[in-house]
Image 1 (spheres, one colour):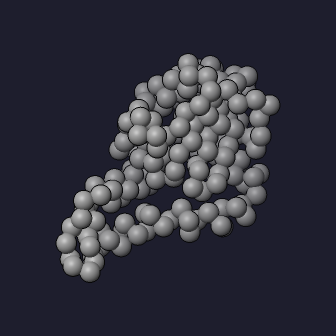
Image 2 (cartoon, helix red, strand yellow):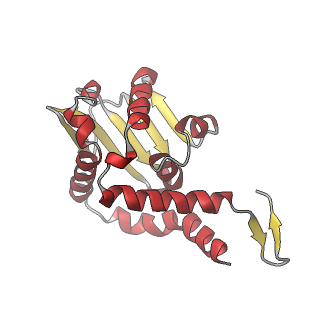
Length: 175
């Protein structure tokens, strides 16, 4: 019963969140994203690990939430924009899949080959971005980011792994 409630929550959350998120002004999204990126990647930014993004643009799209950001590095700072002069590489996927990747519950390569994560554009740049994200130490993230992300990723992972119950007959059904 609880897992079915959690399943509905995980499955319906993007559709529920999409309308109010459309009303959030981009300047607010930008401030939130830049703050989160700065906090999450503080060490990597300070070490120059994002220097390869200088003058290049990464598009990140959360398809089911209809959100899209363009990210670059300028003078040692990650910047988020509403548009970009060009897109060098694009990462797109649904919210729950991106949460699983960020929470280290799913391998980006596996999702790519399952066509649940799309990477388009400069493959070398895309590989650099993916490898950098894979190499980051989750324990170095601020607890304010790390703990909710891990909890959310655990919930999505648990729900996806649980068998679906046929409510009419009380039987488990394979997906």
